Length: 133
View 1 (spheres, rainbow, N blue to C red):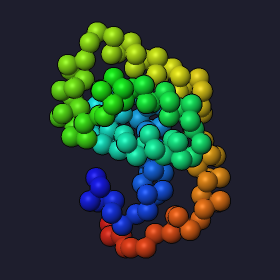
View 2: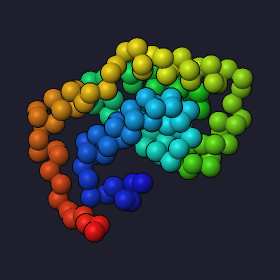
View 3: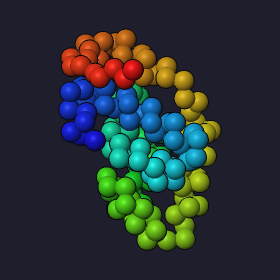
View 4: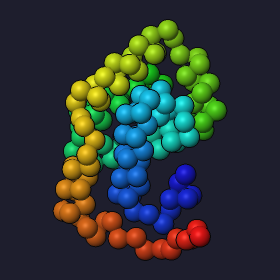
């Protein structure tokens, strides 16, 4: 993930990760986010929530991270193993974290857009992309 994102600014990475966090959590909860390959961006998502002013959501997600001892494995199979080794309260806790997201924030991108408008220089892409035809 970090190698593929090296040409992007940290803020661009955080924006991408935050978008993935909301897409996954709003579709299938924190379990889906962590279970899917998108879980590799968990740390950038957490930092993005803070950067874009969603501290209450970052605090909520940080509690999920704490279930893993303060860091979640970046490797998908290692995440799966860590989730399999969790205690019986793991799913209940994730459901509570999900409910907090659903109740607290309707993802519309407004906070991210406000940050981008205030800091446009951090979102200039200097690189190339391969157009798939």
